[in-house]
Length: 87
Image (cartoon, rainbow, N blue to C red; front, side, top):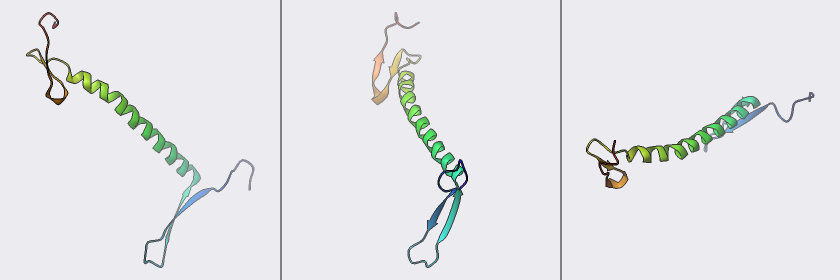
């Protein structure tokens, strides 16, 4: 073992289907597994941030009055705005 390396240099995934006498092995370098792990984590964070920010943006967009002065929000709620409030 050389200085600076920890553990194994790769990851082996063995696939052995039921009823089959032979198995298949897939070997990935350690850097690819680590990159996949961090990439999956980054995608998970982006998905959470998307839904955290998209909800309020969509709610506010749905509450903008249309040309008739009525606002059709979620669940078919209709809100009337007075003419003094519209500009």
